[in-house]
Image 1: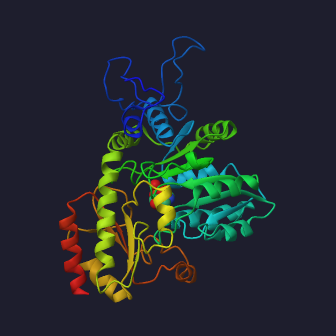
Image 2: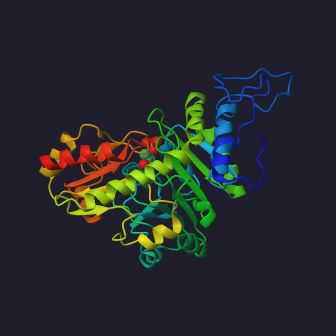
Length: 385
Ligand SMILES: *Cc1c(COP(=O)(O)O)cnc(C)c1O
């Protein structure tokens, strides 16, 4: 089970960070459900002292995800938001951050309602537009925080160009890669300094754990994030670390099916007379289709479409039987949601309107069910509207 430096992505997902358990040979990393570790003698131990600071199950996951994202080190947190909160501690009072404008609602809330209390400032721009992004930079800008594709309008940012722009201004490029997963894109390979995920979504993939990860490459970032993870203590527990490790083993297989089902559903709704507009980067009509083809390995399982009114959206959301009406994404089950009142309810109405998050917009996280069953279910719900 030794990985060579040439190991490909699926092999890395399965094996990176995981050695057979040294005490028994167990092939699966055990859930080390312990708070402390007995030391052999004063000042002599096996590298584990207290479980906030180090836990073998969490360490295996951190090494696994760091390898999957082509980074040097990973830090696992209690949620995706805790991971983003830890990244924010790299900033100091007075610093400015440029952020993708239709970023995850919880990220906007953290930046806008919490971090602005600490003399940090944020500008929200469409990072798919690099000229507009560059204009948003100020001498105080220390970070460019990008999501691509964005949620739920699926704008695509050119990661290589974004990294060059950030570095030209001596700022870090941070990418929230939750929507794509490292199967589809690995931002560090395009020059990003930090990658973060809500492991709650595709990485765990089975809708049974909440967690977050930060993957870093710069030595100064690695030192600080390790320090902050221990100092603030928002760590991922051993049971959740184990669940995500189980999830990453099948990520490539799941993502192939998410990609196939996402594309098939997008093509299906694009042809439906009741659908006004479709947002999916894998449709040639998408404004960033060529960039998505270059940058992404498949177009993902997330799509959104506009039914023109709240009433029509409500009829479809209440009419589906197989699609589960729920927030979240990236699990094996197909979920359907209403961004304006669910995931983006904390975004002010005027901002929602500017972003295109209308009352008629419906979002789907395509799971891995048989595509014919998904299409039939959606078709019968659209007929009701
Ligand atoms: C869900 C999500 C988060 C937040 O993660 P939690 O695990 O819910 O805290 C951050 N970014 C994106 C893109 C997400 O989808």
